[in-house]
Structures are given as C-alpha cells and as structure tokens.
Image 1 (cartoon, rainbow, N blue to C red):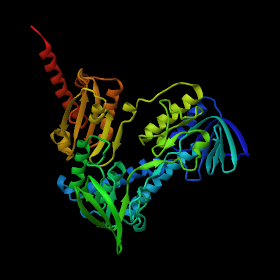
Image 2: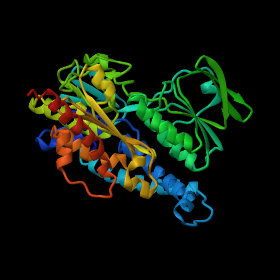
Image 3: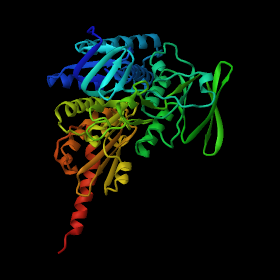
Image 4: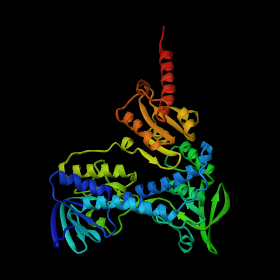
Length: 471
C-alpha cells in the first residue's frame, strides 16, 4: 500500500475497493490511466467475498450435506445419527473466505490507495483523512449496508443481521426471520437444516417478492415442507422481550398475531452507502434508493460516475456490479458511451434448496411493458432425472414472444443456478424456442427439462400458423 503526500492528481479516482470499484480501477489501468483508490478503514475485499455471496454459499453447502445425510435412508443408505459441528462449519468458512480475501487484497494492493473517511470537497476534489485528491474523473463504488427499519421495541430487544448469522458458532434454538428475500430465505434454510426452529415473517404476499408470485409460492412450499413456519402479507407491529426470549407482534389478513423465539434475524434489505461522502458538495443527486445515474452510469456531475450497490435501484448482484464498474470506467475515460442490457445481465439466482434462477423477462415485467407473450411450464416431479435423484420440487417456466423468440426463463428446482446458463446463452443470441428443439440435450439430465416447455410452445406456434393458412 502506497504512502502518499498531502495532495495528489490522478486521471481516475475510485471510491470503494469492492467488486465494482476494483473492476473499474483495473479497466482504468488497462487504458493507461493513473489510478488511485480511496477507501474507508473497513476490511478490504468487498461484500461478496467477506459477508455475502461466498461465505453464505460455504455455509449452505454444510447445511445441504447435513440435510442429505439425515435423509440418506430414503435412498437405502444407513448413515446413522447426524450431528452438526457448527464451530467446525464456521471455521471451514473462515479458512475459505480468508483465501479469497487474501487473493483479492493482493490485487488491490497493486494500486495507490488512501484509507480513511472519504468526502467530496468540490466537484473535482476529494478529502481522504486529511489528504487532498484531485482527479479528472471519479467512480463512486461504495456499495451498500444492511438496512434496519424502525420497528417499535426492536432495538431494545436486540437482533442479529446476516453479518452475525455468518459468524454464529452457537446457534439459538429458535429464530424469527424478518424478511423474505434472497438473504432471508438462504440463511433461514441454513439455520433450519442445522436444527433451529424457524419462523419467517414476510411483508409481501409471497417470498422473493420481486419475482413472479408462482416462484415465491413454490419456494415457500419447499421451505414449509422442511418445518419452517412462514407468514406472508404481514405488518410488523412491535417487538418486545419476554424474559430471555423475544416476541414479535404482527398483523396478517387483518388478524393480530404473535410469535416468540430465542433470537430475531433482521433481513429486510440493504441501502446505498452514501453517508459522509458529502455528495452535495460535488453536485451529485441521490436519494434513499441511491445515487442517480443515467444510462451510461454518469451522475449529475459529468465527471463522476457510479456503479454497484450504491446506484439508485441497484440490482445488488455482484456480476452486475463488476460489469457496471468496467463500463463506467470505459465511459468516463474513453467516452465509449456504453450501456448495459439489464434484461440480460440481471440474471440472478437464490441458493436455497430448491434453487431459484431467473433470466430475461418475468411475466410481471412483460405485463408492465404491455408485451404479448406465451408461457409454458413443466414440473420437476415429471422429469426422469429429477425423480431418479429425489429432486422433484419446483418447475421451469419459459416465456416467448408470438414468433417464438425467447423472452425469459424462471427455474425453481435442483441446480437451477447452473441450468440457467443455457437459458442466458439462448437469450443472448435472441434464440427461438425452435432452436431449443433443434439442439441436442443429453438424457437423463436435469438440463433437458428446458425442452418440454419449448416443445409445448413450438406446437402452439405451429398450430397458430396452420390456423392462419387459407385454402
């Protein structure tokens, strides 16, 4: 890490060394520009590596193995008593994450860096812990932080967030999860599979409320089968202590209810990290949803760009953040005028069991855009490979335009996060459902599930074409 004097001039200053910021800095250097990174004193490596994607997936794998071992007798295997050694699970996670973090930090350390409180002092200048930085262009990539809403009694009762859940070496006997998004669902299932009694309270009427309702309902059904209590369409009224335990009072379908547990896990989303940046001093507009940017990721200050979780209505997906950081840097430094196809790049997955993966448009988005579309679904419980391996929960849903061009795919099912990549490729090349039928798919595989809704849509298209033929 470089030791720096009190005043510096650079071509490009990146604020934040997470995934978006590191990607932007790397592109700037490849373009031959002088680059400096300004970062707080928080640990380096970014949310995904330290407290997000990677640690959660590491823990989920341990819980999955415990679940499979407990269910071994279904497959004719006598595995004996299954016991989760939670300290060992967390220790494994820490070892793996340290390796990822060390590798990223080594790469970050190749850049000049200033650490400390970061704040704009003007349209083209920045103060970092007493050091003045001037740059021709800036990239703000400060990410996001956990959002905890003001719920009466919550602060006094105390709670944990995903940050703490990832580090728990002694799990509470019971937990109330506030929230029903990806983080809530993944870590709720992790806790449940390691023996914790879990109750979920979701404000919206389905889990994963940003997706089509059938996706959330299918996931809720699977989680309920594992013993979770799930209440949707709720309004949290208050939280209170009850001796060593905690109570949450809520309203559901007009009825006031109460649940009690040993701990409360707050998983109600994240907010853009903009506090202390003094964006007003640089003429940068923002609100509670994040920094305002145009289609080229430029803020209201033409010399400042933003990428990742900090921008307004961010996808909060690391692969999108990386892409945004790269494109913002190219636009800022070479005037490339690049944009991002969020319909394509916004593909996403939730690593529950069954997994959830979405690519392209959803039914909700088609309706919002007034697009005509055809839809076909096929269940995993009618797929040979899924039946053979005992992974029958969920479905695949394919959306196509009237000419058969694929618009979107949703998968709730085994290995959905991997299966979706064929669909992403098809959407990238603007393929037709007829192309799916022309491609070979091995049997028996989970991947061949895509052929069933594609075949149905092809038959419907052919029928409609014949109907239009006049003698």
